[in-house]
Length: 277
Image (cartoon, rainbow, N blue to C red; front, side, top):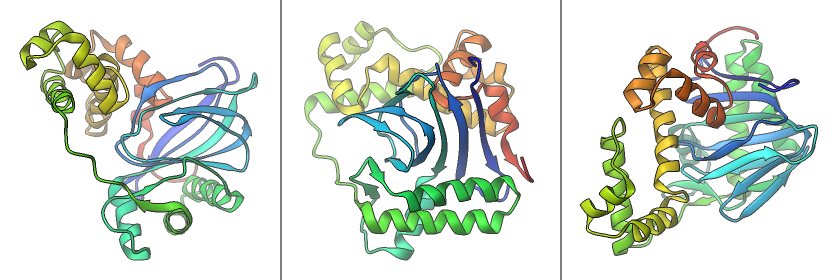
């Protein structure tokens, strides 16, 4: 990390289904990627520029950034001194449970707002971190549920179902399935397009339209995502790197750090830990 940067990414042992990140970044930039679950983040100092499908959000203190599952986004410093933030990553299951218990939302819960000025919700996000770091799982779990319920009440709705697939979208979905299956040895774009009976540029456009990023960017994100699951299961970083198709551990380290915000070793040390920081 650059001078002045620090980060902790972790999962408390007694809070399954929720990851936490607290960090200061100055020069670090997050490439386009997405998450399986939700993102709730609040800035305590500086400005974070979050690139979303609808444009760039300039997030400062008092704001809460909300990102639904599988929404591609980027992040970088919006000012020279960077940004300090606290972020919660609850799983889709956790948010669905809270929505079912506290709202009348049907289908998959989601948020139409990507950035809101909500000092109370921002305070609750920080309180979840504080309680978790003190080893107070009861308080952390309680405040998390209060915070998510509040955001669902004020900004929540159901995520609209996808429209019927066009021929291009069907090819994009088939291409994604091929890349997932052959992650450790993917075909070239030309070979993939030929296999699917389309042209390289048509496939490139269709894939970007459906998933918000080109196939090679999506594949890197998917490899890091799978590597995280392997690390969670106890695999060594070098084993995870080979299993997901990176040339070696340094390649995993570089891409993993850019997307997750911490290196694989630091990420693995933060899995299911207990007690104060």
